[in-house]
Length: 114
Length: 117
Image 1 (spheres, rainbow over the protein chains, first blue to last red):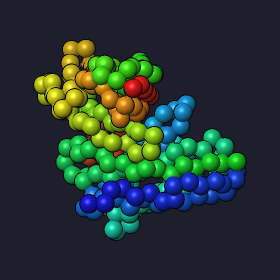
Image 2 (tube, each protein chain N blue to C red):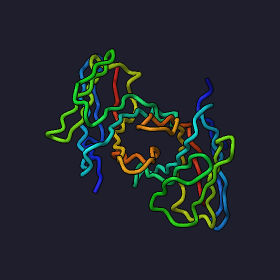
Image 3 (cartoon, helix red, strand yellow):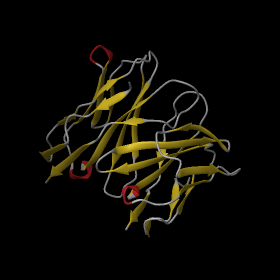
Image 4 (tube, rainbow over the protein chains, first blue to last red):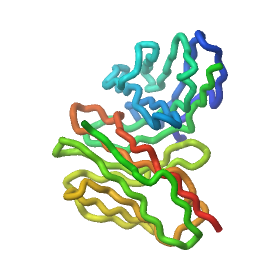
């Protein structure tokens, strides 16, 4: 079974631009979550989608948004990029049913904002 | 407030030594889940274990063992006879119980383990 796939692996953008990151979950997983990882703040939850609906959202500004498609694939968008948005963005999928099934993470997209 | 503290930022051991990674959590929920993840240099977080707050049994899986103690709000992780391949950053995480959301894990800052040959 293929794991969680994130594209692209690396991105370099300029301040003020916008960026879209993509995540393909494990087949059969309906929940997709996004995390930002930085050396200073560690791993921080961005949002979670389940069946195309945002189920939970972390404490990030509105510049960060996401969506989920009917095939459970998800995209994350960051508009008006700031230097502080440089980070490793991790996507995770899970079955999404009752209980707390483990999250399965992708390799991440490393975003550098210059 | 929900919080996970991993006081050890970095640990360095020599191969075959035993090492324990500490994790202390804070929550007011009576039902919650705890996790350990491993992050090798490739970046992918690898799931190691999940523990329900009602299940205080310790668990052993090969060279790995976990000690969950609700009385001290701790969920410590021990690697026996460490190997170079165990070198990674290890994260402890807490899952709040509210609602149906599963994706919101509260992570500790991680402990970087270096195992030298």
